[in-house]
Structure formats: C-alpha cells, structure tokens
Length: 174
Image 1 (tube, rainbow, N blue to C red):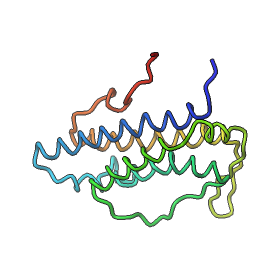
Image 2: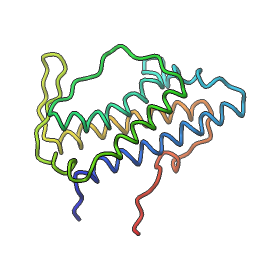
Image 3: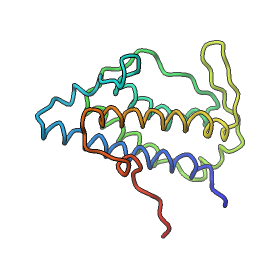
C-alpha cells in the first residue's frame, strides 16, 4: 500500500477538524437545550492541572494548519504563552477557518514536503526532523491528544457525543 504525504497529513487533519466542528456544534446545541451558558465550557478542564478547552482547540489548529505551515518554512516554534480570550462561537469559527485553510492546500504542494527537514525550536533546544518523522512522531500525536482532550471536556459536561462523532467522516472506498 502506498499513501501520499498529503493523505497522511492534510486528509487526517481534515477528518478530525471536521469531526471536532461537529462535536462543538453538538456541545452548543446541548447548552441551548439545557439553558447552559456555552462560555462556561471555554475554561473547563478535565483536571485542575490540565489546560482548558480553549487551549485544546487552539492546539488543534497549531498542530494541523500550524504544522503544515511550519513544514513549508522548515521550522516550528511554540505559540506565544499568552492565550487569546475567545468565546465558544469564536472557537467554532477558528475550527471552520482552519478547515478552510487546510482545504486550500494542493496535493502537489504538500507531497513536495516529503523528505524535507524541519526543526522544532523551543528556546535554545532544537529538535531536527524530516517532515515525515515530524508528522508521524510529533504533529499527529499532539493533534489527536488535543482533539481527544477537547472531546473529553465536552463529554464530561454531559454532551451526548460518542466515538462516531470523534471519528468524523470516514474515507470509504468509492
């Protein structure tokens, strides 16, 4: 079996970003049904020592669109520690914009990244990867971790979502 770099990266990102958009939509519908303020979810955490829902959604963007953009320039630096104050609706828009930006990439431009080098820089610490190693051992694991944590925060609030919601649109044989 042969898959392209585009399929391994952008297609996986799109599947989960789309799924998370649906999960957030269900979260909002649940809040409306129970007359709960969705803004209460924005700073909700799984545990006190974990980052809130807002951070998880920001990281979904960072480890998908941000990862592709970083592979294009050859370096990834962590985002500012200062987090924007976003509403639940703005987080929904952020995911919609992320999806739209990911959809704009062509197969050829993404496949051309295969074999290129990328450096992950945190201060003086530099970790050198190929784009494939970066994608498979750093970007995708982080991406799925944050998507799962955002899902867990909503599920922990009682939002009626399940595994099918998290998986999103499957890429079935035509």
